Length: 126
Image 1: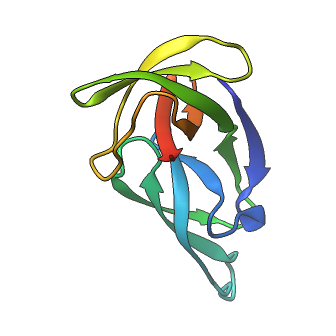
Image 2 (image 1 turned 180 degrees about the horizontal axis):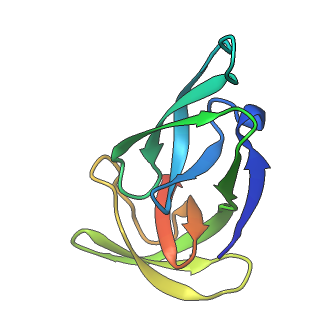
């Protein structure tokens, strides 16, 4: 798996984190001050990168947590068929089929930007 370990205190809004073995993008990050005999806690609210489900996590700020390494790549649309788009990676020239988002209309020869993590791909910009 393409991931690394880091402390919870090093996370920020907009960064990525693994929650329930799913890569998520952090929507909000807040900390609670330590009590008399405890340590500070962080509350993380995040949304799944590929499934858009909301997830939350509460951990001590000095705990270790997994952070996914998500690649941002460029591609070119080769063809479209209904809700699918055949895309060619502009670096490796590999072709694969991706699901088109509802709010995006793609035509052949359009250049797109997409996220990739362990055989999961998602179009971010067209």
